Image (cartoon, rainbow, N blue to C red; front, side, top):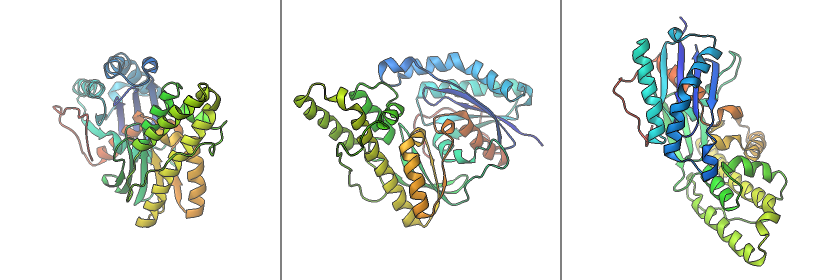
Length: 338
């Protein structure tokens, strides 16, 4: 029996819809919001308005690209949270309307579980996926954590940021350098031209498997202030070196904690997810470490690292198989644990 899951992702500033059919991805459509670039970050009210404009054409495109019609949809999965409440509300409301119109069940999905299970997105049956248990590091603008995944819905957070996320550190440091938003990809590109040893930035000594990036941001800001006093053109002349040094520091922190987690748990199946998982330096260094540590490493395609409906759809598919459906009166949640 064919099951076609329509998935909706609207947790922040990208509107996305996807179709998962019997566990295989048929389509994944996304509408990006460029309106936030001039503000140096996401403006929640503008994000929710853009979702309202984008969600219908995005869903229509996803269904059409999959070669289906609305009547072929078996269930609709949606991001309940965490995220921006106004943005989540748009996706939740659309889901309820579609569900009532087609008389099909709805499936709530935790956005973080979407990132964690993104390695299970398959575009063809031969695609290789992790075996349980595996370790995953979710790294984005809002989250940095290490999780033991024992089953599709048996997960344990063993390390998390105690303040800022890694992606936030990239974005905020890029902002003070005048590089624009989002800062992560810009720094990634600039770093390829710079010397990562040009500047020494501190690595916070946080016990266990937790992370901290607030102090790194502060240190970076003081570095800029001190150097600008000596040379007012400092940032312009040294952007590439600054980017390379910052990126190296963040990547070293992430990989150090992940290696520690693997050694402590004895788990060698390793995956990563989240927007920062697209960082070229992180992917390159992880590949090198995986060979030394004898890890089975699962790096998601870059198109599946940012917020996208394919990851919501794969979680929805596994929940569909368990008949785990949500009530029509469910509400979105800006803060949501799993």
